[in-house]
Length: 512
Image (tube, rainbow, N blue to C red):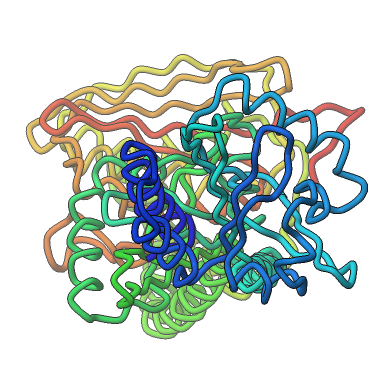
């Protein structure tokens, strides 16, 4: 039972007896003795004060607590037990109490001190109850020394402060919340992540869980509550500015009956960046090895084909109507040269050499790429629309951009199995000096589930044997190497658009 509850109970018991005695006008020594016996046996200090503030009754616990004999207290004003600095105000409080005497507990919520005979002070809580007698109203006071409670509260407060200091000096965010998700405590790092612009602070853990992840997180809480451990689990959280970031969390459930979860949260954005760089490096190594293999196995056949085409061109004059055949041989020769150039550039790109960049007219590069795939366009019945800007130049490696443009065009043609339309448009997109090349087809499109994977190496939507899955991966690296951006918009069954943005070249500003 708490001290203040003990005080109230003791006051009630004593008052009930005392009031019973008063009602019977304290007839007989037996009633008086009964009252004194109850007061004397009470475990806390009890004293009685008249309207003048004089002490008229004390018990043995009062003597022990204050160090006085009862003869030293009887007849003295109660202020003898109050520290000197509080005596004047205490006298005023005492007088106001008798104006409107009501049972009350004082000392709760504020520091109240008493003084022993030797001058030592100690914190107390006091229960007051008015008692009506023939001689007027008396006040029965029960006094509890709360020194140990205060000491325990101080130790608890210091412990909590040390714990908070430890939490605030960790680099991880820490949250403590109940089973309903109501946040009980957070540390400084959690405030920085989730509350820096929020005046009301973080009230509920569910406020930082993305909607689509809430069912999974609810299952995690249930599993941890049942005894599972959760360490370094990667998930997304919504931080103060509304951004969703990847985090690693650890979660434990307190088994002390409090029903609390303690969650540690680590911002792993840098970890993800590093991981992606490592993955990209590993992919580049695979691409390099694949490129070496392609060059080794395809170099000789291509050289042989080129030699035979050139020999045919030398002998073609002997054939009537040779002009038409010469055009076709020129086209084959051009395609072989292009294939050799692709292999050479792929090998160099895989090893990340310095690219040879100069001002290049984008429209000319697109027209050259179109010229390469024209036979394919005619064969597949694909209509071509060009909306070009003859004056736009970019700082680029022409061979690499030609590789990107031609690969994207061939992908578009492959997606239009029964003919269609390929539209290529160049336009200025912003005042910062960027152009956008948009290549749109009316093909089969790409499903939403596949679209996020489209730039991954070796990922392809083409049937086995029809594609390596390297075209768009290489294209992305080339465009990024030119300080540009590449993205894809697609609707399944309607078509696909590839958008490439590149910085416009000017003599005042060149892109490294």
